[in-house]
Image (cartoon, rainbow, N blue to C red; front, side):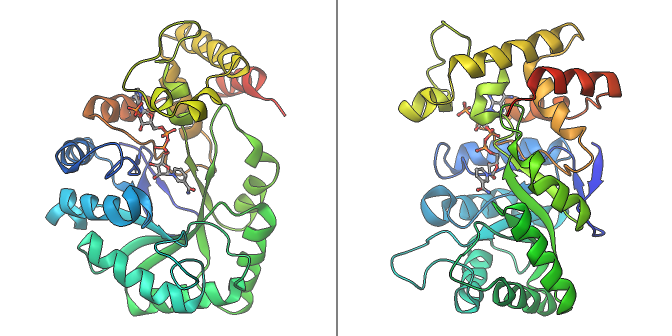
Length: 314
Ligand code: NAP
């Protein structure tokens, strides 16, 4: 397993990570144990969850149980900010909410520290100063080791970096945003900000929820158990002709090099210097195995140029 450093920090993360949003949603505790066990055995150290995943708390609870004493071997990343209940006090980035949210996550995860605590979405009602100061206190208390952002724009990441510097607060070292071969929009705005101000990107939906795995073929029956099949109309919004055009080019690129579509999707992300880890989700151990293998492809300059030619679209 290759390791990369997370942003401007000393924290190393495995280049293949594991996204945990299926736990408590698509898969139960027994299947979660198998997926997590396979990831640990293959050397994955970054596990990414959120308080909201798994119908509010299910993913953290199942992940904590599946890890058991092996929790200390890994980098445990979770998030706060999405609604965890009704009303004004169960969401967001206020100090009042964060000090409660972290305790609830620690309890569900069965641990006394979180390695990477991420603001899930920007909170327009709370000054970022307040969020950063509350997170800084959690770092000083030892409950949290590093902090990260998610779904911020470039200006929001930059503003947070300036405020952290000006007030000597702990800065964000990561930016978790939507990023894959079908959607490269963050390269215009967030990626330059993150590169300049000390963060790494942790791409979410790295496989476009399965569209980039090669298991969906144009004009063929959809796999019954696939996420995009089960998503119905939402899935159809991803299984479009324009996306198939692009995926078919990626497949041809990969196959001429003895690789698969999945290898190209994960290998391309893993080859970006600004990406620290590819946190693909999985529902089966074979998927984890394939995703780890795919992350070993370090593309050369010619391959990266060709990928730009094939996949770049506005
Ligand atoms: P993804 O990684 O693009 O797709 C994962 C899905 O693709 C799996 O659940 C599985 O679904 C299928 N798959 C994975 N590996 C496969 C393989 N080798 N062969 C065939 N199919 C395979 O999407 P994601 O899991 O939603 O995103 C990754 C992580 O990012 C999440 O787990 C979560 O931690 C994070 N995330 C964050 C945000 C945010 O706002 N910050 C938003 C979304 C996700 P099926 O088996 O069901 O087809």
